[in-house]
Amino acid sequence: MIGRGSVGGGLASFWRAAGHEVQELGRDGGDASSADVVVVACPGDAIADALGGVSGLEGKVAIDATNAIKGRPEGFDSLAHQVRSITNGPTAKAFNTIFARIYDEVGAQRARPSCLYCGDDDARDITHALVADAGFDPVAVGGLDHASDLEDLLLNVLFPIAQSRGGPFFYRVAGPGEL
View 1 (tube, rainbow, N blue to C red):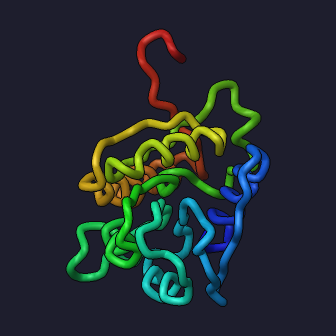
View 2: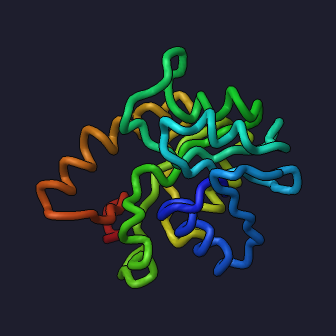
């Protein structure tokens, strides 16, 4: 886990509870050589700096949980594409459309809240499993070319809904008869 804030720390807690071994790296960097998956949970405008202090990233599956609140760097379709350019491994976008402020309420829900994700073929299965292990219902959106759509969804739809409702919320994608 690269990031120890509310997103990174919250996800780390979920995965530890599910039996995963989680190493958390913060601003001081560290070595990710022994990791099977690297989750990037830092501010979107700090990706290059955060990953620059971490060794052992080359070729790792990466899950980008960042948001483009301050925009995207020039030359990248999404922040997940920026992550992939640094790690040179299969990359997914997930957890960016979930409000970390209410992570502690996930387990108390009548039905599992949904979590949208997308990614490269070689990152999707592990991302699906980690979304489920965090207590969410994984909803695949497609390939990594949809990462900017998930970033834009948060900024242009989910944030305005949260503002109009007075706070963060869960969402559920369900077929007929599943609610």
